[in-house]
Length: 120
Image 1 (cartoon, rainbow, N blue to C red):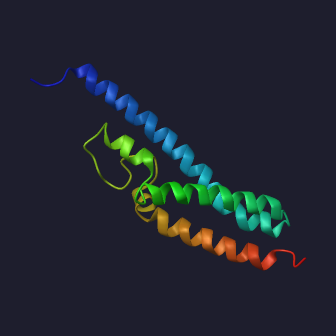
Image 2 (image 1 turned 90 degrees about the horizontal axis):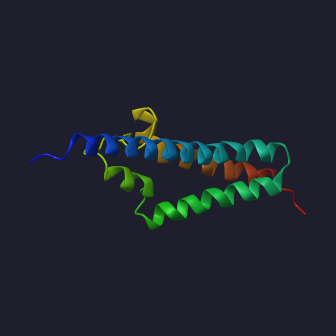
């Protein structure tokens, strides 16, 4: 006996909601990473420190969860799909290389911010 059709529709709606929330969270953290060198260039060093701290909290969450976003595990409960972007509205290539791209940008942003930090 297969589950009722409404159960599939319910799961599909939940998966869409998780993907939307995940995409918004991704955009927020990607924005923080991209803002680090800009804020540093503008001399907004307190803002840079906050941005780095926010991203480090996200990194800690990823580390605690085995380098997976908790929303990925949640999305996995509502679909059998497991391609790299099954849980987020990103192009496949970006979802596949997200950590390496934004990890490198984060590190480069920190190096740039450090180079611009006031000496006193």
